[in-house]
Image (cartoon, rainbow, N blue to C red):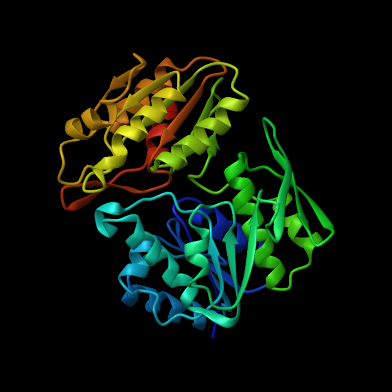
Length: 379
């Protein structure tokens, strides 16, 4: 009953699937299923997982089918693929954003992690498309699992769709996509090289689904920033606030490097690391946040059954610079950052994006970074 588009990768799933959804919705009856919930027309349902559990997923698909939906773009997490939540879905398009390693507490090894990601491409229909980031170092391993036609994209000159002439400005990004003698000029409100990759994957996907290139480009130019993904918030303040979901080393590096290009003053980052997840990445996350920020405030982020103090200790153990504070309570940490920020500073709140809960022990307590930021200015 549906045309399925699946997006997998360590980073970029939410942005890429949301971009495809925003473009396709102008032409088809399309829904989006992912971290930010389910969107279709005026329907919005919040969900507990990036990819819902199988009984919930089929409940949602049944509802969307009854409402007349024909296209589904969705995030396919490695955990969902591992636990067979998507086994009976045949995809028309499968997309790889990148692989840098995450959830190794579950997968144990990179080999297992890649194997889980690969499952998406095995379920692509024989007449479907596998759209792969050719710059990713694991792409050859993924290619072995692909059904259908393989289409590659990237800066690599051997890609089917080559990314060129990237210019990252203060308020927009311009670049060009070259393929088979054709050249497409793209302008977007989304910032950063990582978003160039996300947009290119979305562009190719929409081409395979018979949307004209000029119409795709027009939609990309007017695309709205994805909530919680490099989202700029304005409450009348003289500095910039950016809310971002980055919770991996690569994700943090991407957003902070992008903001550093055009910064006029300080970057103040608020970050933490989730409990019950791979501990190995914490020191790397802490060090890269310190290196790319003028000041870091380390705080709690879904501690679950771990002590936030212990998590922060692990995050800060390899930092050489004396440019960080430790404030356990996340609301207090955000308030501190907003209090000390001055004109032209950039305050970056990392890790939770638009999540609406804080995972403490076995409970999900109602909590939102956005609500905390808004309450600061309301008060």
